[in-house]
Amino acid sequence: MRVLLINPKFRLPIDTRTTPHLGLAYLGAVTERRGDMCKIYDADVEDEPLADVLRQFRPDVVGITANTPQVKQAWRTAQLIKQVIPGTPIIIGGPHPSVLSEESAMRPEIDIVVRGEGEAIWVELLDVIDMAKQADPDFTAEDLLDPEAHLLDTVFGITYRTSDGKIHLNPDHPPIPNLDDLPWPAYHLFKMERYTNLQPATDHVDGARSFSILTSRGCPYRCTFCSQSIMPQKWRCRSAQNVADEWEHLVRDYGAQEIGVLDDSANIRVDRLHELADELIRRKINHVPWIFVNGIRANLASKELLSHLKEAGLKRVAFGVETGDPDIMLSIDKRIDHDTIRQAFQNAKEVGLETIGFFIIGLPGGHRGDDGAHHPVCHRA
Ligand code: B12
Ligand code: SF4
Image (cartoon, rainbow, N blue to C red; front, top):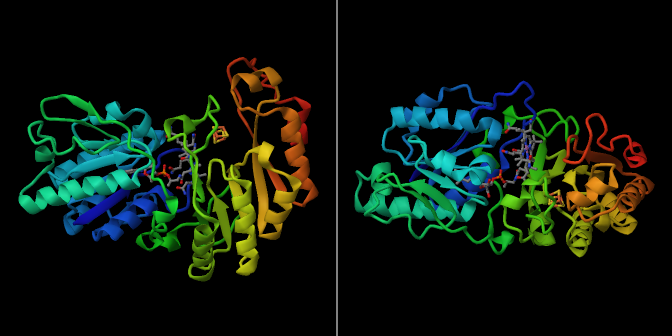
């Protein structure tokens, strides 16, 4: 089949994302592995109007990603697709529709909503549509949503509205058990020369020499403010070997000059990070600086670990401080205290790493103008 994946235009005064969308890169990779022809349209960097691409490529299925600031644009994009190539199934996924799946499923321009981790569900949907198209070349999105057809009954992790108006919220899809089974992100589907980097999270590197990597997914903690609570609780990681293979590919084949590790909680298994550090050093790719873009758990950031990671090329580490107020810290269920956080920063400084602290302004229990941000721990971070 011909499959089109779309990142809708991001309309905010501050546009921070200047790297290819990692979620779409993974979906593109599993689409190609299924044997489909895949195209990615990233509206942030494209010159060609989408309508022209649709007329020329004539996709059999379209997938659109959306976070909250993008979701209205995603719906508008879906409306355009319905006008230009009516009958083509349109599937939406990403952080926003994962949380509010019925909101998108109610909309006439959206056929199916995928909730949470997408690769396995996406492939199952492509299989269903492919089989239906083989049986009937005139098959359309309306046939997919025919309540009598029951085509989507067995696909977990989706929300959709059949043509009788009934919303179906199928059970959650189980998490992908072994992340090493996933193909590497399909960067060849992006116009790589049009991207810059992950600024401000990483440093400025000209052109497309800055890459992201995801070494684990999920988080076993459940801090009350964090979007992790909508994703599978089970923390899963790729093996150090598998991560190092992709890392080497980014450095040697793409000329990566900096790498941003995007994990939500990279250091849940400390032995795996030691193994990864050994691999990066052994393969002589530790000259490329890399950064933990998101915070790692401060209670698992020993001096020994940070020193080993520094030797493997780590340049900067981030920790979630969130608040300077110990009572608020307890209330957000971060399961950490300020002494531990202070110690993690000290460990990082002592081994020569740059540090970032993440703070939340306006947590419940704080007072206007005083979120604990003046607490000594915040000054020391
Ligand atoms: C790294 C990151 C960034 C990086 C760049 C990301 C990149 N390379 O694309 C930077 C720092 C630039 C960034 C910017 C922003 N980010 Co950000 N970011 C993240 C982070 C930490 C990881 C994203 C990631 O790559 N995940 C890994 C990939 C594999 O997962 P994924 O993209 O979610 O895709 C999977 C599923 O969602 C699903 N899926 C996604 N799309 C689709 C589409 C279809 C058709 C299907 C079937 C499935 C599907 O399948 C994918 C594979 O499993 C997340 C937090 C998180 N844990 O997700 C926040 C997060 C996505 N960001 C968020 C926000 C708010 C932003 C900004 C709006 C911030 C701002 N105000 O500027 C901007 C938006 C930029 C933009 N143009 O979209 C929020 C979104 C919340 C929401 N309500 O939507 C998140 C969830 C963090 C949070 N909790 O607040 N971000
Ligand atoms: S430890 Fe980090 S990723 Fe995990 S729930 Fe808390 S804030 Fe979210």
